[in-house]
Image (cartoon, rainbow, N blue to C red; front, side, top):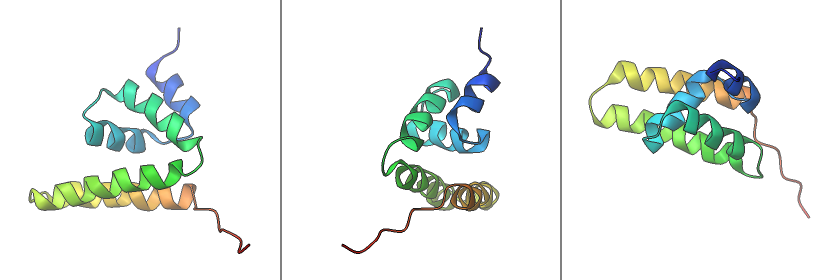
Length: 91
C-alpha cells in the first residue's frame, strides 16, 4: 500500500506545491498530487503550476492574509528554482 508521502515522492513536486494546487482547485491533497504529477510531466505544465501558486499568492493578498501570501510566495520562489522554464530557441 502506498502512503501519501509515497505519492508525493512520485510527483517530482514538494508537499507545499501540492498544497497550493489543492487550495487553488479546492480538492483533497491526494487529488492535487495526481493533478500536479500530470502537470509537471506535460509540456507547459510548469507554467500552469506557477500560475496556480501565483494565484494563491494574489488570493491571500486580496483577503488580507499577508503571512499566507508570503508563504505562497516562498513556495513559488522555490518552485521556480527547482523547475526553471526551458529557454526557447529561435527558429
